Length: 288
Image (cartoon, rainbow, N blue to C red; front, side, top):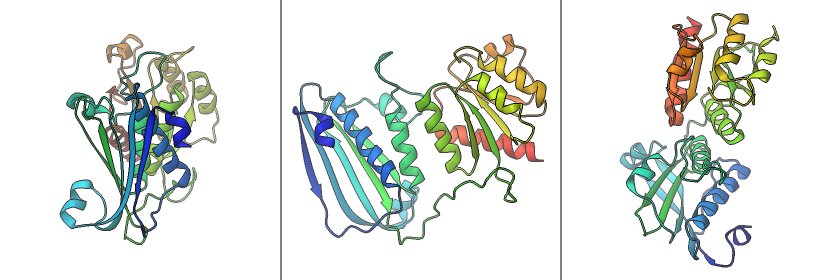
């Protein structure tokens, strides 16, 4: 599959270790990781080059495990590297942000690496990138062995269950952004109700049996804007905490009269951890 994807101008070089321990991860998601990294490598080598994939077994000492924020002990290391254009320090610092892209308008969402990051973190692992302009890129993925004592993320409980898992109403029209945001929130224990438009979110909010703890919305949406949809929802659920995530300035909310203490704002680009932390604070505040 990867050979067909990267084309004849790119050499695929494999160095696969033997006797690797199993890891606890979704096969489909790990396939997506390889596909996304391969596509990025291919795009960085328009004149051809080499894409390498290496796997090995390693034992992480406590200090290295703490630095990577993974469980110490046996693990699998997956390295994906290329001989492409490479990246500067500014780009490398932002590539895992869900809303960051180096691609031109109409050339893709640029969210492949945010998806990769989310999948690896959900699998209890870590991903580190090394790159310099003109010297290619190297992505090192570390996933603890399945028999290690890893605190695997638990699936969120159903709405209304006795565990008290909070429900998030997410309004985002971009499929890739919505997907990676919802995955990050679910990995943090939330139940997520995904809405591709403001109109859909209003229809969901009209359901009196639907429990919602926090509303997360983009500002710029096709058709009804995010602020307009939120205003309608707050008429039905006036005490619902709201978090806007947008590249637009906050004064766009002021223009719609959304200045209450329960209306919060994060400016894109924002990391997955910043987003989930902000939602957690609102959910905890609303439960008191």
